[in-house]
Image (cartoon, rainbow, N blue to C red):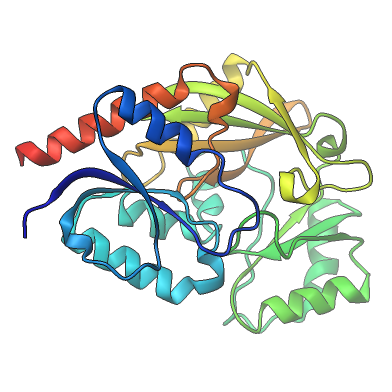
Length: 296
């Protein structure tokens, strides 16, 4: 079947918040003479007809994980998927943070008890708090988005142990010390388009909360990162299994040093609205990807 020269941007059906970015990319592509469409990933269609499929806002994938991974494998086998399947699978489980640490990238201290470990949650949290010298702990799913399932409490809180136990019945969990700077200076996100740094934002939680995502009441503002923050972000991205077309590196201040909180390489919000040039830069990179596939 003849492949479509249109770029297909992937979104979700059951969204935790509105998709305000895909339309900006569609407009930027149109200004360059490139057709595009925004399609729900669960839509039934012949994906082999699409020449370039770009994961943008499938923010419901974690609720349909098995189906999503099957879809990723299928699309990657019949079309050109960005970011690549290797990157998606590597970035899916936050266990990748341990790999970043092994490569010398500063991260928020992280442990990932697994479904198969059969740990005693109460003992694990007490031991974790002792070893990391912390009185506050974050527990959340190792696979998930938008801080869903993230709980902040003290190590001996029975509810926290129960939450960890519940998570471990179905998958891996992420355990980290709470980083107090989040309440003051928030979390910074550096956006990369291809290998190039594009722009950054600072995300702040609402009063009384620790979650910076907008669907939890967080706010966002433009931010000028330090050279050290950019250097740390580049080092983190260098560990990924393949180059990325788009990426977001989330960091926090940990004792005066930028530390990676997460790498967002599957469906990150890129905060295109806060950069006057980012949508066009991304559109040009997608156009290059499209032309490259035409030449193959």
